[in-house]
Image (cartoon, rainbow, N blue to C red; front, top):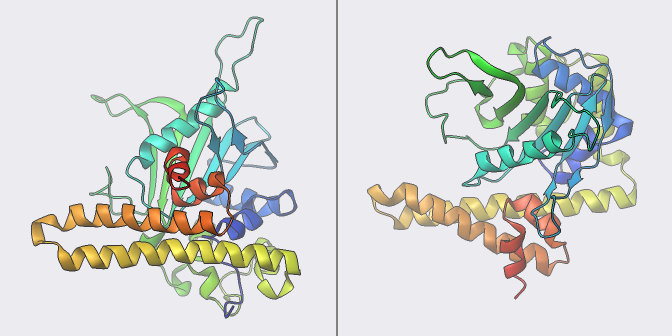
Length: 296
């Protein structure tokens, strides 16, 4: 590997930085930066990232990071590398798990719920419903249509379009700016930028340095990088092919078909290399049923 620091877009890289008890101060700093002072997270408790449905045949969910803060508020944090047609539906579905698990069985539960935040860090431009939005950070809540006032403030969806963040190092002002710069550029850096002098980034660069990995960590990271690169390359190749073949009016449709074909090819390759169907589904955005069908 030529990179000095890990790629946070990979499954291993993201979970190493944000999904481990050992590095939870990184997650705390990121959450506080994202909410611009509206949150003051002092501590987080990591929760079981694998959520089961109410029935044995129900679709389960596997989160990248699932935690709660010291006030009992729930946070789902997902790194999403692949465009998915029903991605909005997926995030809504994911948010139902922390809603239902708060239901108290028996007793006199009054339906009080703690706030839930579903955060999607997107390694693509999320045009569906955000075509006219100029910013890269989008916060969605339930709203009364006529007055545009927030109707319910305990259910929040945050979508962050990483490719749209274009600030240079000398333009970084807020902690959120600095975290976004890290998410977009970490694997391209060969040294710690002068603008990132906060103590939390000392921790981050120590944990992100590939040379400090043991043999097992290095093997897991290499596997994760290969899976990530396979997905990216397949999507790019399929899009170029469809773009070249399609007529002008058919380009949009061709891109969608190209993504689907490329992802299926990558998923098949991942299965052939011994990866589990659950992990393949999580990393590609395919359903477990679609992945399972590739084994047949």
